Image (cartoon, rainbow, N blue to C red; front, top):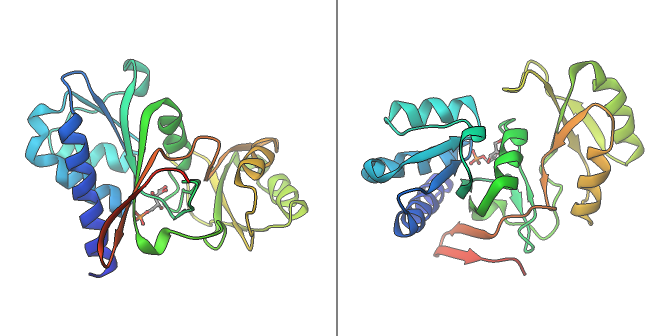
Length: 224
Ligand code: 5RP
């Protein structure tokens, strides 16, 4: 099985998980990225049973609407029943790095609201220590240099993601060369820098369930 086949397999497993638990008023939070896109395709066969979704990016909103699946503003739903999304890295505690696609802020908001956060990923994303993948930080544009200097003081190498604007009109700094031994602590430290909108560590609110695609099949993990 190659990486794309593993992504398709976990997307199908997550769709089955949701379909089996779907109730009339369930709201499905839908993530962003190639694995989430496969998940969206897997919703099509039971789309008539889906009352509402919320989208973590404009791209995801477009994809859901193209299938005729209703997409609501987060402010107009009472709860998010399930949130299904990919990740750039995940550890055994189900702490994640997200935001490779730049949608981290809306993703983190939906994760905060969700009753159950299910992360779907192929085996290349499962790591002992987070930080090999550059950690994205969304910043208010005028604060970019200030935030970059603060990141250097924390021991990271900030790299401006040139030419990229988030759905919220902001910019992204990717932090390279951070060996993240305490993800919760770093998540808090980064969020305290003035001008940071949010960062791509999902440790204070980790995933509840990880569905991992491996060459030997699907594995599921809850936090260790
Ligand atoms: C987007 C994300 C994605 O979940 C993450 O980048 C994984 O993407 P893919 O499924 O394409 O590997 O956080 O902001």
